Image (tube, rainbow, N blue to C red; front, side):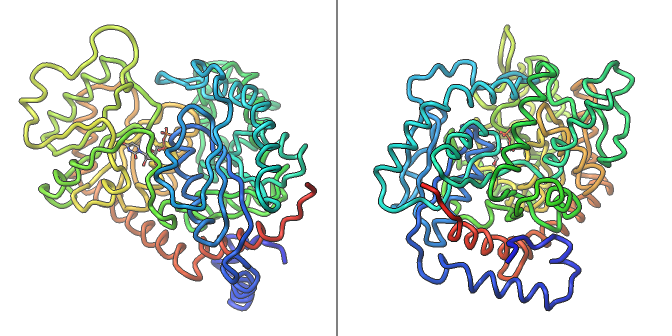
Length: 488
Ligand code: UDP
């Protein structure tokens, strides 16, 4: 059976087809039926926004009876203590230089870092994979890789291990990556001048040319190579797994199916179907949940820009006064490395006194619990895919402030497709921030965005229920993993 159910088939096809496919998937998924004894290998990219979904996927597969081995870079390593028995963790590349592997700054060269990670970890991974294949009992079913690790996929191919790739971004983002070469051929990328930037891309609605400029610090050739490898990793795999759900991105999922020619599994939101085990690299401050308990329903703005994006000191000061002047309660995450550039780093004088009792600042939050808390009424986010998906799945509307990579694409979809938020454009300035916060939390427009976000939340809940599209896709994915031929 073709293990792909097209998104439109799930929504629109005859019930017979869907029921038959669902029944067949349930019947053929041996992990569910037998408890399973096969081992699956996984290799996440060593960044928070990539570790989270890969470890959530590991939990989902472990719960279906598969044994799990997680390869991981020696830097930004996940904590094995947070996982149950039956997991094995294998560090890769201890001792490789890492200073230029972690992108920093508001407009970071993520693509350059990805190419260097692949280059530096390839040989150590080959050695580790060989050892694991010799060590472990039984032939592993497959290796699930982050789609940014094409270099590791080449190693797995060489050693005869079948691969699946996990895309930790949205479907729209992969569609945009697939279209990148055609835009270069048309002479649109890299943009020749500033006036082109807001040009609508007819083949990729609602995207504009500027959404495809993932970072101005990355040379065009680096970007091209990086995106080529991501798409190649999908096409050379036995299947692509996406942390999204049909009702959110059905058109984009269909484009991926047509483009990659391998089975596509939309199984998100992964954080909702996994065990909920911790995979934070920083320790979350749980006291903010007690503070939220004391706030009125839907009154608090949650402010967080993920694990990598940063701002300069001037932007930090404007943000602080925008929050203070809005007179709305807020919970603000300021990571230890959240401010870049030289000079004085710190909150402005008088800010603490001004916001006493209605504002809380933490260095890392239990974000999914925060977004699910009834006191939270809005999220000011950088639109990393996990943050965007978590906000949608908790019914929380957004103020968008994308920084780099796929964040501009996600923000465009939030504003123009799902209409569950709006972008704060231009220079960060306290007056604009204050107006944006009031619009989201106090005005009718924000209320409409909240209603739409709640509709999407209901759809997400439906997708992960038994018989829902994401649960069915998990059955099909397990079925696929159990039946992949190995040439080891
Ligand atoms: N996160 C968190 N606490 C925080 C900030 C972020 O747990 O204070 C989590 C968040 O829930 C998400 C991940 O870190 O799962 C960030 O991923 P995302 O794709 O949103 O952004 P990135 O960090 O990759 O830019």
